[in-house]
Image 1 (cartoon, rainbow, N blue to C red):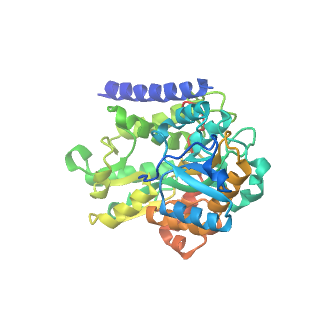
Image 2: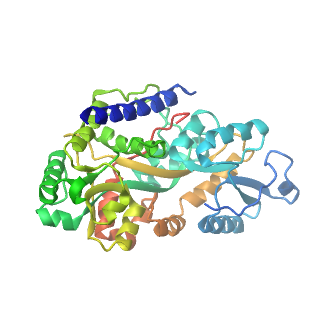
Image 3: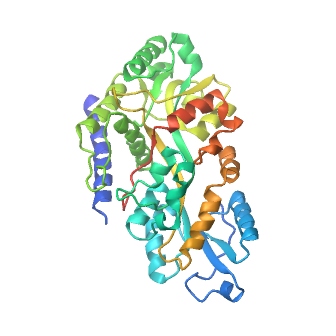
Length: 401
């Protein structure tokens, strides 16, 4: 049995290595209708207006922002176009659109795709247009993830984000008399007491922890791989070196992170199915999940009381890093009106009302510092989530990721 377990984990590690190595080697609902390319002779010019095209999905807050901007800039017309494909193929879509002369003026994308677009020349450095002057309006977490270019170029403006949180079953913790663990030793102690109290999880259905342990299905490997990074980062390792030129997934820290998960699994602490429903059914003491699923789970589950904490520190001197999802806006290299495009993105991305109106229903985290100062984010849970947000990291912006 132990040999089988090790084999699965080696398979998962090799998947991570291959994904990262390939990356290093490589150079909602939308009811909008397609429009003419901004690179053909635009009808908007004959109407005396500058037409700007944005690749995005239809969002009420975006419509509001566009309407308000156009009312203040009567010489500008902004049109939303649907992505001509799945956003996970953004780099391919951009390459094709640039080649065909049909690229938009602006686009919205996850931060890792956006950095890749910048490095490939698909989007432009926003520094000459004034982006450096608004840097301090944004949280360090979001700004650094949006603009992690080793050369210091500013390729995008951040908007909304979400993070992975450490969440726990308060009732199971109370049953064994433990508090939220802040270190690896404390986490092991909690897990041991949970197992001692409830016995073998295969028989009792009660587990101490749930993590990225299912390497059986390809549909889960991507999530499991991303999940593994939170351990890798907290062990002091990373996927690439600082300038994103070399894969470092085979570091001693990477092995430590993998060994920790193997040890947790072999100790019988973990529900190997990684079934989120079991946590919300009250059968798992600790797990990790995004903020929206935490709040939705708390609202929907009557099985137990739940809480959120900061990720336990795994190695002394290394911060409690976690995963970050972030959407950003950029100006493409084919735009004939880059300053006008940037001016709109600045208007939209620095408006705290737009960010709050969009983020609150989804439990997302605004990227603007001032947007986080309202009473909505002053609850005990949100204070913990925003503390964790200081240590959130995005996947690296490497072509082919």
